[in-house]
Image 1 (tube, rainbow, N blue to C red):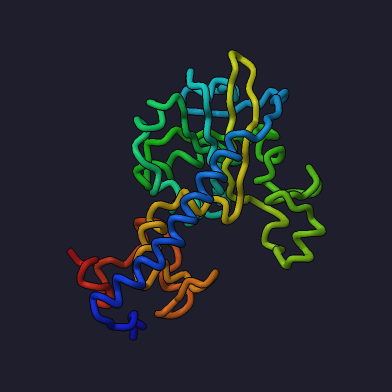
Image 2: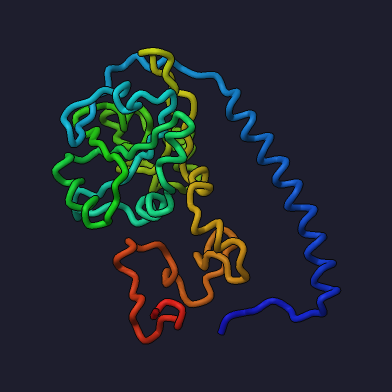
Length: 257
């Protein structure tokens, strides 16, 4: 049975809500300050000639901008052994809004995966996504931005931690294979600069569904990071959006419509 909040009078609720509001406003101020500091980060010139495969053929990193000044790259984990994408990465993509809002601000958002385009396209169609999605399979791009980890190719680093630190922290799942992340690039004419990358929980702000769920008493139901899993481990963990059993007899009535 779900654990529900304490039942109180309207006056008591308003007092508690105002107390929380003070903390929320302090968090908003801190968030704005962090955003400002992020914008002031120095940048690094990109000198490598990265090449990507897209629907129209091979393109350069510069061409990924499609004329915009800013480029957001979501490093999408594609599992070649199964021919499907990572459920967590898919959850992020499902939460991306209409691209017109990005483009109106001189910014383009693309997905990049280290898998052949011929393997990516069928899954993209299955998910019904229209975002531009490129293959970096024949490029060092994923290795240089630390989302494909293979010590035989490049020293292991994930979330700005080297192999020794990851092992010390027990993060062995970040020592090899594909990893999620976001990298941000700025162009000045034909010169491209790398301005920012984030990984792990740094991607949390991209998940609009989770931010909505954080407003509710039961939260995300993930069972980790202080968020309750009230119905058993894994039941509410991310799945591909066509794998949820919405029509099952155990599903809540709101999901049967």
